[in-house]
Each structure stands twice: as C-alpha cells, then as structure tokens.
Length: 461
Ligand code: SF4
Image (cartoon, rainbow, N blue to C red; front, side, top):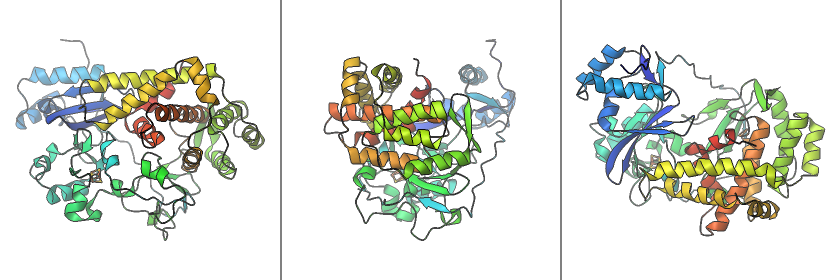
C-alpha cells in the first residue's frame, strides 16, 4: 500500500486538461496542469483506463469499465496511475456540480470601435494553442466531413478528448499533430472549411480572436491580440467586424460565443476590492484618454496609482499625465520570474515536443528575450528605449482595456505591471529576431495558450 488516499469516486480535476498529441508521427496523451504549467505524459492505453474516471464510479466500477474497454491489464496498474495523479493534486471526488454562468441575452453589445480584422488565412493560428475546442455537434460534423483524419470517422476518441477532465458531456479538444489542429491541411488551410464550407468549422475558430465580457452594463466585444493579423489590421478598413454590424445584444452573438461575466467585486490590489461598476467607470475613463506616448511608463504609473489610491479618477489622470518610467530594480523580479517560467517551459517542452512544433520555437524565443533582459544594464536600456511599434502597442492597450482583460486572474495593479513587462519582452523578442512577425502577438498567444502567464504570480521582490 502506498498510503495515498484516493477519492472515493475519482475524476480529473477541472485544472487537469487532457490533450491528444501526435508528435513526429507518434501518438501521446498529455495531461496539462493549468495551475502550475506542469504536465504528465501517458500512453494511449493508460488514458483509456483513466477516461472512465468521471466521478460516478468507485475504484471497482472504474476497474470494470477499464476492463470492458480492453485497456486494463492489471487493476494495480490503474491504482498506480490514480495515485500518481492524486499526489499531483490532479484528481477530484464525485461529479462536478459547478453551474455555468448564465449568458445574458438582452445585454447591449459594446464593440471595440474602429477595428475590423483582415485574416491572411495562413493557418498560423491553428498551430499555436494547446487547446482547440469543438462542441460535440461540431466534432461529429468534422468527423463526417473528414472521416479519415486520425481515423476519427469510426473512432471519436482518436481525434478528440474532453475539454476538461473526463467530462464526456462538455466540449471536446481536438488532437494536435506537432501542435497543429488535426484538421489543418498541409497547404495551411482548414481541412473542414475546404471539405464542408466555412460554416462547418467550429464556432470558436469562426469567432476567433473576438472576446466577450459581460460587465453588468454591456457585453464588451474586443479581441485577444494573439495573431499577427490583428496588428496588421490596425488602421486598415474593410476587414471582418468582430461581431456583425447588425448585432445589438447578447442574443445576436454567434452561436458558440462564450461570454465571461465579471464578478460583482474585483480585486484591484493586494487584499483590496472594488465594485464592478467602479472598475467599468475606470476603464471608460482610460479609454477616453489619448494613447500614451510610452505605454510601459503609463502602465507602471497606473499600477502605482491603483496601489495608492484605488480607482480614484484624479489619481488615474495624474498618472497618465505624468507617467514615470519604472526603476530597473522594480522590473527585474518580473523579468526573472518570466525568464524562469519560460526556461522551465522550454526544458519541459523540449523533452517531448517535435522540432516542427511552433509553440516550442515560440517558447524559446520568449525565453531568449527574457534572458537577455536579466542583465540590469540591458534592462535599463530597454526601459529607456522608445517602442519600435507605437501604433501596435497603443492598439494592444486599447484592446486589453476595452475587453476588460486586466481583471479576473490577477489584481488590477499586478495585471498592469504584467502588461508593461510583456511589452518589454516582446520588444526584446523583436530585437533578437528581426524577422519574427509581430512578436507581441506570439508572446500573448503563448502566455495565455500555454499557461506561461502564471509567471506573474511567481514574482518575488
Ligand atoms: S478546425 Fe480548421 S480553423 Fe479551426 S483550428 Fe482546426 S484547421 Fe484551424
């Protein structure tokens, strides 16, 4: 007996994401811990044993289910798998009773003004993320349109795993081939689009990169600045709007749009909260101001103002009127934390990801840029150097503020400093690799899509 106490009805916890990867032609199942960025690799047979652990079966029932699927060799093997996951904090007990936040239907939409997206249809976005989600209907449609992809026509489990844990009733994550969606064609085009038309693609792909946040007054429609096309579209008319021009309320959003509701109280600094309405007013105030000449100085000064005076209007305007560049010693711990997180990501990904995997290359680019800024002299120079892309950075700030992307995961003051650090690292990425297209978007996609953003919780002064 190992002494590890297993849940009575084991299931994977919500933060344990299972993804099926094909790496250099070989199939693997990878379990990602979204809290820590750690991962567990397992064989497809191990996963087949675990897949029945949905919180409804005790160990005996789980053993029978695994035996029925043909995946079980010895009951002790299943126990070892469960104990390992339990030790890592990746199991929960019983069924998940979490209620989904209600999506308001009559809430007015408030779309980011003066922006439309011109997509280059290169398929670059289909090879960056760790999760690409399909509804069950969309997955079925894709399997019918392209049944030979991973033999998914006959075997759903070869192309899809549950979005979260082992919950077979929710959305599905598609298998990734060298981190590209299994349905991405060799020509860089979406295979589903080519075979069955654009409407057959998953809603998440058709809606990307739009974001929807309900702030109690409106649904803010913005975008994640995570694809080069987003920045290439700035100031260019004639692209696709983030939502249809005729859309007015939540009811008009496309099917499959995920609306995130801001909580009634938001953390704005360590142990300080503010009502959601006060934060919305603060964001409106910010959006009404001209773009700052130096976004890094503006973000750092705003963070100091939030720490000192909360969401006070006069303090906010004063910070924007006289932004101060951050001190090197204040930024250094942030750079170190990001550098360590990126290094760890590279070390872990290098052991199993293909050399063709774009996310591995991007991790290395981020790690190299952060490492280059660990030298205080280099960091001081970077802080004092003007942005190489003022229009792009100004748009980034506009999209982040309009989309309420500064709140929810981190206290607002921390999030403001995090964004300043991102700008510095993205500039360094561009300096180290001048051919890299829109480094800020590469950084943004990797931070969110691969969990590197947890670095901001690991900053030690
Ligand atoms: S379904 Fe099509 S558009 Fe969506 S990620 Fe896959 S290849 Fe790209």
